[in-house]
Image (cartoon, rainbow, N blue to C red; front, top):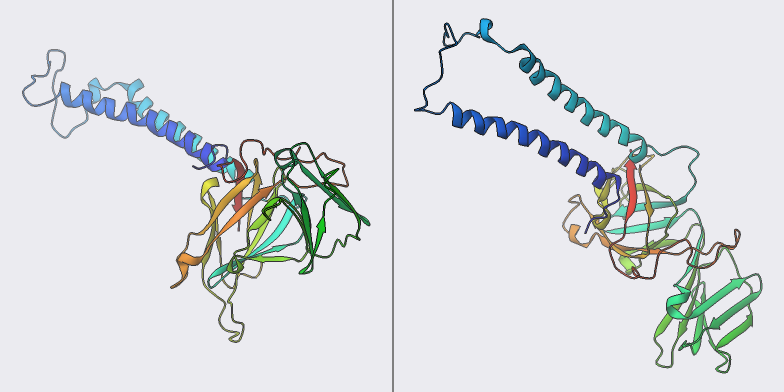
Length: 335
């Protein structure tokens, strides 16, 4: 299901409306003329002096109708052009002073790489899991609410994992542990069966996820996401080989953008997700024998904003949409 509030969907609806309106008048007049002037129907020539086949009846033409036939289609075409051109500013042009979450997407043969130019800290919906994780400075705090099944927590920093047992009386953990903003870190809270019931994650600037390792691209919602996209070869041994054409697409949002090999500045696309969820990534350009493997997922999450003191989950609608339900996004792209 394509999001209904994307610029593309709105523009499609407007074009469809005017197309249907023009079709009604055009086909209506055509069928009327077919019925009125069909073979076997004698025309009323009492008010016509002379009609010569192949000649325009200058003496009997209807000037207002003829002008209408030219003016109305011209106005409609001009209006459709205005709709298309006015959307360019919002869809295809990225303001130089725009603020958002910047990422670099690289298409290779045959997988995606997602590099973070801005750090991202997020966690699952606290209301849904009844678990709240706070990690800043030298204090790691985990609090379980009423009904929480949290028992253990696994903290992973730079690939090294450490397990902690929560206090079962208070369903909480207070640990002196220094937070490193430049290191990839996760906190996974599990139940008695070892199932992960809550995830907290910090993604530092420069970190790369790869679809080849079945890693999702994770982006925050309610924040403009600016994608800088490149197509590069997986093997750099041949300097003359610049890779193949890819096309990064988010089918549920109705957007895509080409990745052009050899284009130094790359291509750009912007999205502003409305809701949390997990959505498919597809390659819309045939790129070789393993084109079908150019798939992945994008996970939209609620970003933790310690600097502005935002409560958890207030910048993301999660109650009915997380995970995996269709969500809206305002989106566009730019070369």
